[in-house]
Length: 305
Image (cartoon, rainbow, N blue to C red):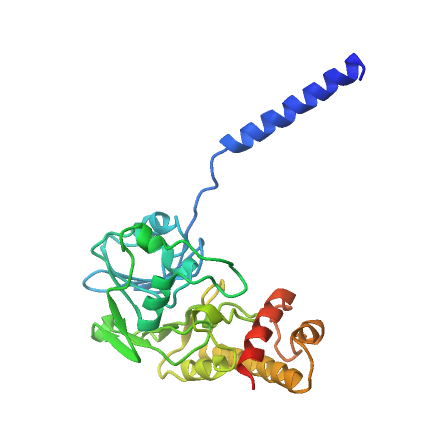
């Protein structure tokens, strides 16, 4: 190598090293939680995982879902921009880490409520089917049990009364085996978690009790809850309506029917991935990701005799 080339190479290497060092020292991106008002006493807080609902009652603030690990404090900071009321309760719509892990940063006195199956899945810390692999670290165990549900229910549970009333419903397996529908009757609002995340195929988390075959029936029951006019989704940017939930149930039912027909005709999961497209009737729905089609088809194949 000539002296000139060697010098250029050395300069380039030094430059790359400086860039790498600068990248390593660069501050992490700020964790921003945005706040949208739904009603005078109800807000949706977005960013850092699933959509969080904030409900202001006479006794304090109730939080539905608490986002990803490390997002508990940013979430609490965002809540403080809305109210000085203390957070007295957390309700989890289901077990997944992007909806539950932030609560280990909440005060230990906060009551956590979830379906009995969700509590069990949180203890087990199972990987999300087709999304994670291998044993998962249990953030709740690592924090001395902080954030684990201390109150559970099986079918329904009513919390508070009058304008502060909250109704919790379990309608069966869907996204997981412990999906909770959180209804604020005085406001006509329901949080449906990831049983309706966005207009796309959902995760059917077999590792945590989820089902493809039962999914649409569960959603249909949720769509029929009386008095509800507004739906908070698991991840969607805007609220929707019970009619949108019913349409989503029909979308999933159509997908399940197609997958079951494929199996009974002797076709494979890969055949489904290669051929299934979102029906044209579902305007505004996302084109399916092949990995999601495959994972959901695998679950449905397993449930179909």
